[in-house]
Length: 294
Image (cartoon, rainbow, N blue to C red; front, side):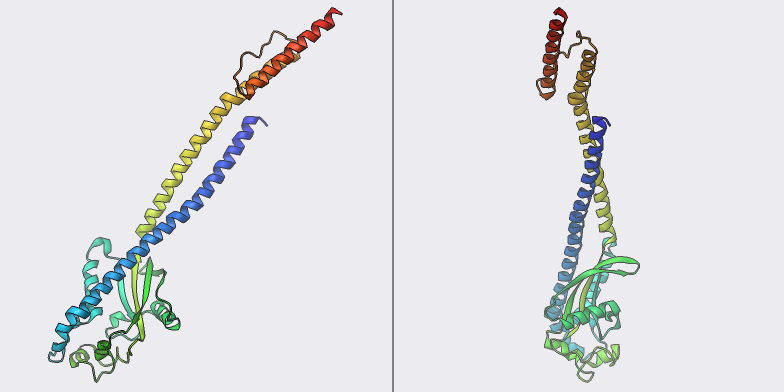
């Protein structure tokens, strides 16, 4: 096998190995950055929802609660969960946020819209079993698409919440008239009654991830190809061609053609080899002349 072929095989092996190692490393880095971006979006939405909840608790509820008992119709705007849900409904009207979901997934909600499904109920149970657990993240399939979720325990921290959720007798009559007396009662202070959960779509983000990954791999492939071609070209010009020339001259000398000349070579190792062959040729010529003169 020729040296050039051997070198090419080595370069191909190095090329493929480098691409594989680079692909794995880059895939991990890009995936980490992608998941970090998705997680950051979920955190922002969660904080946004909690800000709306806090505003409703501190600013809106004190204004509306005194009128709840005197009105026949219940005023849901006084309830933080309702306010958050309504704000997100407005957010969903924007195309880029239509698949983002916020839910107060509750095991025993007043409004059945907030009823936790089996997946969310499992998350609630995890929070109940481990009180030190402050958040859970992961992926789930929902509405035919892959969603990233970020969940926190939904804890009753305000005693005023029990006004509407302890017993039907203590709840405003307008609330009973609107939602009935069957659901949303029996809550206790500091109980984990559900989970605040945000769902963020991943399809578009991972599509960008795949595109970025392919682009990087293509660029790496081009770079490694250029490197391989460049090394091949340099190898042929600086090593293989001079060696072939030296081999051809040595072949001529070996069959008695003393007029063959190695010529002037470069000052590198190949040049030193040619000079050594020249000296060997001259020594051979002298030895032959001595033999012929005897």
